[in-house]
Length: 260
Image (tube, rainbow, N blue to C red; front, side):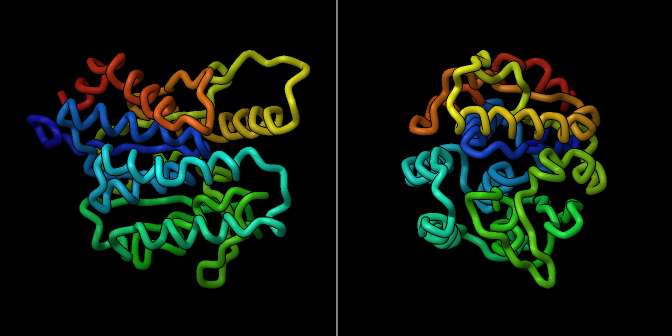
């Protein structure tokens, strides 16, 4: 259900790599509150969660899927090994594709739009029609981890590089209210220490960059949820899921007011 007055609610899920597991917790809380966003958007990990959810996987099923890939994702995102020496990104892509229940956007239970980035121009490219997997694999094509994706004549990389939280795209498609989930804010990270190792510094730098890119879109949302992810680690996805659930329930009144 979407509220007594049938307000069309859109849910925009940000990119954020392993942090994106928090989106599952947000969805779990919305399910408990009997709130179903009728339009979904996302970039990178947010796109994955949005598409699989719209394909029929509820929060419990998404958690099972996340646990299936927990070790692989933790290893990939914690590795500085050049992708040319890794076979895991290709295996992970192939396995995820087999887990996707539907193959075209039009078959999804709810409309979804996802963002990727044109590696030539740097512009965002948004997909919501036709074959899903090509655009989806491009949307989570994190540079340095996954090889550049080809969709038609375009070479594409991670959607977070250009449109990390697609709020405006939901407005274009009829959303009267938009709930956005942001995973980048500097306050969500552990306190900076000069002796942090290189992977941690790169992770922080990426989050700062994505936070700055996301600001214009976040200002257009009616409500932004920002899970507190301090202390979470890639090897424990349930920690991220719980933080997403907690921030939604802490803001329950504001979330329910979107449909008032």
